[in-house]
Picture 1: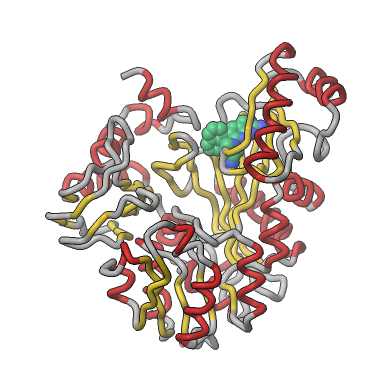
Picture 2: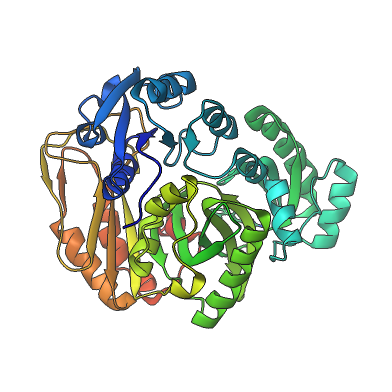
Length: 450
Ligand code: MV4
């Protein structure tokens, strides 16, 4: 059995991802410390942890984003490592640096890699230099409106103006024609300065109907890196993913192996360590790098079920200074997986819904995994992200996967709050989804046409 030199982990998160991290710790024989706001005193992650510490009032700023409170909780409880999960402090390089300054292990990449990927211009330059294809556009930041306009004219419209400090769909402006460019550019700059404290922008050719495909990587502190294939995350609404699949229907095994190999080599050469995700846009048979995420992602389970690799376990082992336990040859892709994000939101209006769960029944059976922190009688507080459960379904092929998904969605009962279960049932029966005909605009188009 693999032993970890990490003995006690503080989990700086809540909800299903906190539970997911707890489970990986238990499997490794690691002690766990939960932190929680006053609103989460009875939450599942608190109940399952060996110890818990209240870190503040409900508002995230005063609890789950409260760095002094979290680091104090780690020191007081004798934790030797902190796992940030996703969201909250997960991609805050200052936090990861402070964690290490206190002699604790940050379960994630080094602070300088987090900072590097937080700057989208630097991330793009870095991976272009390392040989990955990027979306055609300006070579780095543009600073002069006339030069920018000239560049846009040469590129051809539509052109996208992106903020260096943006990402995840924040801080972007489309210029559909020359006449729109100057205003879009000035607005983008101004908004970027206000939102991110960094008014640097760059230009990209706007791809009108791409798919969103991302590759999962894991790398150790000795330069070893492997890719775990891709996920198709095109089904999204307002930059919030709703449904993800692994593998993507549009990549062949040969393409995956060759392209994934290039990604792993680039990540290894960068000296990156931990889990990470490289995001690409896919159009006309080509993948173009756009951004890298330096955290564990919501949709990591679909990669886990098709590869059999526990990514959170690997994160903990890597952060503890262990070498990767596998090579690229050990990574194989079995069947097809789909994740449905079950948000506490109305399926028609997407309005968030808080409340108490008064009847809970979880689906099961072959090929079904549910990652959630729900239980009968639990509260869904109004202060946090509306993701309350993830239904992950796995089968030998996509058709059987969809059949299992419909079966599991029919079984799933969550009474007390609105959920996206009805939306997912509609999607699982939609002819275009069944045929694999969708791009990043599919969901928004579907809702306009109702
Ligand atoms: C783009 C694009 C089209 N062309 N870049 C939005 C999220 C951020 N990660 C990058 N985004 C986009 N970049 C070019 N050159 C379209 C999007 C985009 C998008 C991308 C992935 C998933 C959902 C999206 C929704 C709207 C726009």
